Length: 121
Image 1 (spheres, helix red, strand yellow):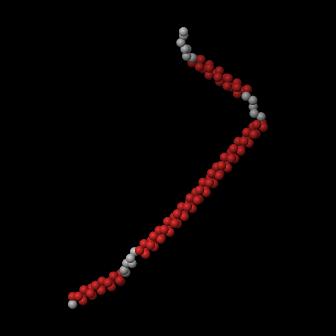
Image 2 (cartoon, rainbow, N blue to C red):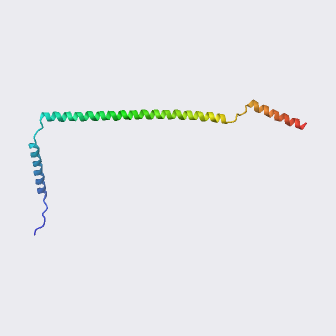
Image 3 (cartoon, helix red, strand yellow):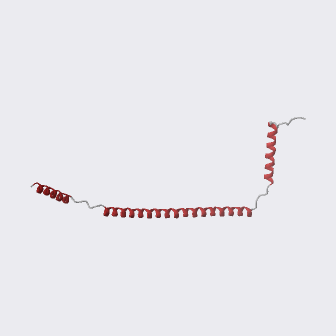
């Protein structure tokens, strides 16, 4: 029994050429679409393009609305934070003891000095 013979280069080229010729013959024999079919395809294609454009516009509008809402939320949050900071500053100012002025400090120092002098006499 003889072994399997691999096809040579010329055999492969001939097979490729015959397959190419067969495919071209099939394309030549294919019927051409009618004018009505061509216009129907064009309308279908235009309808798809319009639908895609509408969808893109709707998505873009939704993004714009979402961005506006987010910006508004951020503004509201910033305003609330600013109000909270102001309230915290007001509460801190009320909680801190009142510091004496320079005049009050001088009067207290003079009173201590006078008391010390009075004790020594």
